[in-house]
Image (cartoon, rainbow, N blue to C red; front, side, top):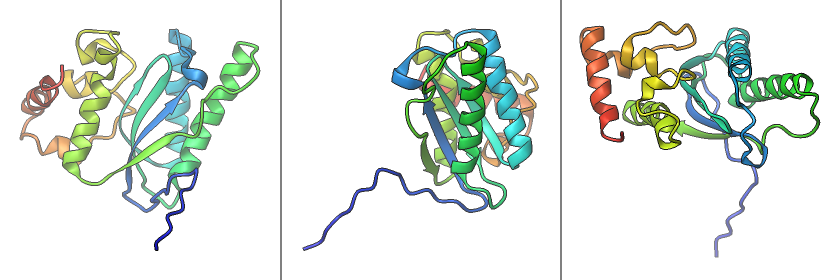
Length: 188
């Protein structure tokens, strides 16, 4: 008879090149990230953590009650340390800024290991179409707190690191954007 032990924490694979789809949610699914100041502060903290910890950020979307990130580990630092920094710094800022006490984040982040380029493209698509599913915009590039404008319109975004699977979609930037639009069109 075999016994399966279930742990509260998910197993994390931490090795150089490990790529994750990360989701972190506000406490009780409250809409706590509500204005430009909140969104821009999160982006600022994300940028500082990226500089400090040296990870690649392939895509992101900031929603009112959760955040999606596509992160690739570059060094020996693990994903839990990276997410602890991002979430702790933002929660501390938010609680001080709004003179609030208590938990900001609902739980530990959720992290799914991305196994190949096909799955990475699916995650990029999922992240970029999240605001449409939430009825925040009609087009992925209509939501300004994401990487969609870079991938779809070519608008420079210094947070985004371009994955090789995006570069391999076509030989020119214009054709890559068109190919990516076709991938997104399947869902929106």
